[in-house]
Amino acid sequence: MYVTMVFIYYHLARHEEREIEGKYGEKYLDYKGKTGMFLPGNLGGRFSSLSGGWRFEVRLSPFLMYGLILSITVGFGFLLREYSKGRIPSFYLEGKNTRVVYSYPRKYAEMRSIINFALDDERIQSLMERPHLDHQTSYIAHIVPSHHGMGSLIATEDETLSRPQRMDWENLRFPLRLLVPFIGGNHHNQHCRTQKEILRVIFSKLFSPDGGYIPESEAFSINAMRTPLFLIEVDSKTGEILEVSETLPRHFWGDMPMPAF
Image 1 (cartoon, rainbow, N blue to C red):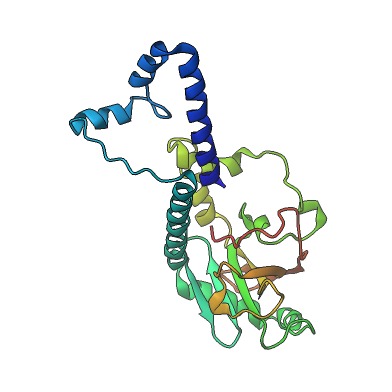
Image 2: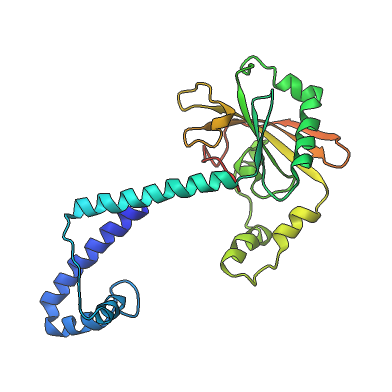
């Protein structure tokens, strides 16, 4: 969509230039020669002067150029996606058809013990033995801090949480800090590390777009879909299961792509 928008606006700008040239003639051409089209500084003119006025022009039809740029952009997006998938901290849980994903720095052994605490609970075993779930069902389990702001993108417990709540400065500080580093300090990371050792494990069922089975090895596939089933709150120090809750199959955010934080 972004590439299409840029392409359309470029040709709209060219059309407007021709109209203004017809109205103001040499005066506008003089202005145009000293002014950048989209970016300040007349980068094209500077490049031309550095190259001694040499120009290399390839004349392609607008549709061919659009297709070429779109293909390059989408191809780069898929490469970036594959690289990102390789950086997601996750592991496979043997015998449970489950891919476990954790969203902030923790040791593998600790995350492994958390998921084992959850699966050893009789309530969880009962939930995973329901008729619509069988030995072929694959799962993805997200382990997040109990008060993590992104948890609602994965699952919603009840209707009261299905719509965004009031604007909260604490939730905005982290994304703002990415743009302006001195805003908010390191509050988000500190919160994840220093809050009580209560973690939330959110289980979701994996399936293909046609409703069929999909293996856990394809959990990060572009075709993988998920339905949140239930969540567990665990005390990571004692292994105590504090809460087991079923989740809504759909919520305000809809069927968003797999959040990986």
